[in-house]
Length: 191
Image (cartoon, rainbow, N blue to C red; front, side, top):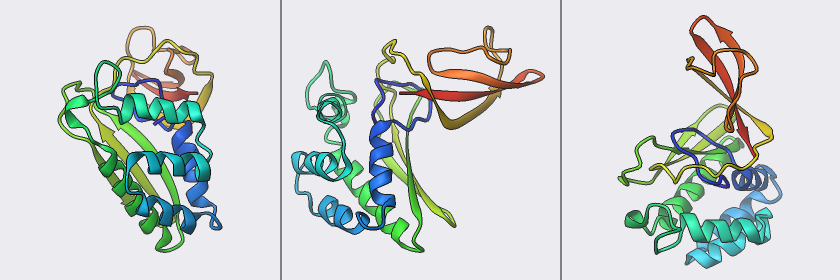
């Protein structure tokens, strides 16, 4: 959440960072969970994200238009709507799991390479120190050519492709940080 579209890559956008920061602040965690769990509808949920997690009005508008809208052409995955209940319950369950053992929450979005709408689901993975929440979706529309100046703490190991075989080479979404034969390690670029 918070990207301007991405295909087949894992991402941690600014909305996930704000939600995670709120959940990982032990003074805010329980009130946030209680509010999210009790939210009866999408608008209430989005108001909680704005008022308790600091999601901006522009980010809320982006979510309403692309993630949770009901009509094309702007909504992603219109045949799968409403996805709000899946995202809401996934967040609630992830926070509950984080509370067990007093762990942190770390959230990501992993759109598929497949643009055909099949499902939206949330995976919650428990670890010793953190719970990882991954929202799986079909592909979104191709990313807009926006500047992504910041690197994220996300690395990808893969076979090199033309133009991405030397350290320092980059695209709008990633930069090569290391090369090992025909393999490269790239670092994801985000907003």
